[in-house]
Length: 155
Image: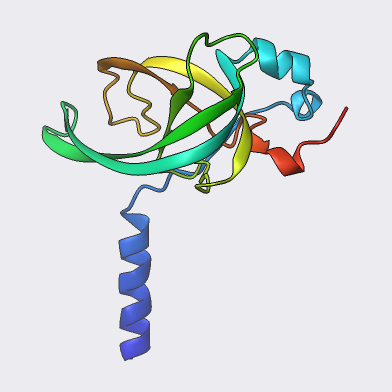
């Protein structure tokens, strides 16, 4: 009897929580998109070494919920090795990732080929988070061709 009650309560608890999964929504024919296509769809493409990692928590007022919600991000600082001409005169660049299922977790000390885009609104994968204007920043996710340099195929 206790097991049955526990099972019912677990099902009720799970059914009341919203779960968001990463969906890159990439058509099958574009799954292996070319480097040229990925480059042209990115605002900043570079090779860099992760030299710092900082976690950030911000409280955001969400009108739909009439409450404040926590917004988690990780800010990675990269030492630029090759910036492919899109970001001039910078030796370092910060890349923001959000704490969700699309997040890339970079390792400090490792080198990556990063495809990123510039945003001036919060990246909100939840329908509840508003898209308020913020200081522009670059971000990436698992839906890009971003990869460790030692895993990038030579072509």
